[in-house]
Length: 124
Length: 358
Image (tube, rainbow over all chains, first blue to last red; front, side, top):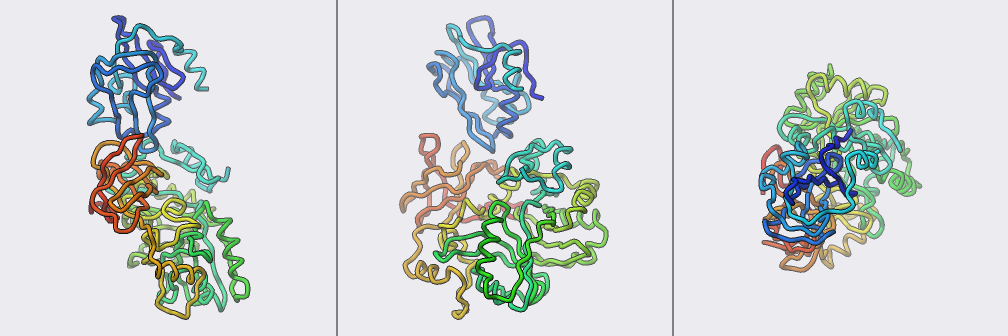
């Protein structure tokens, strides 16, 4: 069964978002998403200071099987991208909620996210 | 969905089961990349029981196969010898690619693809009209491919008696042991055996192989291995509308004997005179990313299309087979997710016997 962490929120497209409490958020893909995609071989990340509008595709995660866009959950500005993924994209598989995070960004707020319990129900 | 006799073994081993042309088959058992390396570096096994074995028997078996397929079974002179070929339609398109194993002039065995089985059997039966040959699909046979540098040694260890009959087999040869049919063939670019056996023995044999350390591998690794080995996949590199001359399979077509009028020969000869426009080449991506099927390719000689794209675990780079205008060479560009990315045109295979060749 896929792991869902209670400390963060989720999107319908299987990303997780962790509110860092200082106006920044950390984002990654859920355990369910990484399992579905399989072995990750490349992550295309935005640069620090890049901006994205809500629903823009601003990252791409590529597994052996498929490329999958990651969409901005709100208007946002990138604070940091996880450069470790350049050399070790497999961190997204082995540690999707910790070392395999994708980006940190600033945003004025995000609407329409699911809490962990609601997200877990969508996976049944 | 259809199940092979090893279905339960896959589920028990944690196989991620997917629909593969109507068969519920394991894509991987955890990590496709680890399974890939397992085969390149040691040994792995694949359930390929979904593929179909067809036996041909009768006084005109040889004559029939000389009409049915584009390669010439007259090349097969010793018992157990194998030949790769395509069978063609009248227009020269590929009905399927296949392997024929020789027993004697009145007994041949053929292995065809899973997804094309119904079409193939109907086609073969239609062509067989008027020949003294019986066409016998063996739907009750399982098939296990054991592949990797240590594959043969592990098979000898797991299955008593095999070394005695298959220990001296050269590549592309086969032998029988009771109900087992053991061929030194494969679809990975590594050494190994493909073993056909009664479905009742499949699970036991699979477990014996696991006991000696042969790891199950899924269809995901099978595809990256065959692609690194530069081997064609029916439906990707060729199909009913693509001839072997356009798919870098000219070597599988034998036009030597002018009296051998196999199906599709007229069309192939006409195409040969005119000159085929396209061929299959290999591509190695220069930058990061993964090449995907059907992406557009722009070469020095015009436009083409990726027929099979993936990430090569052995090379750590994206690779592909692509159909491009003949004479394409040097660097090309691939349209990937609305960007043009540079790739190098190479001659497959990319990897054979554990070594990178491009």
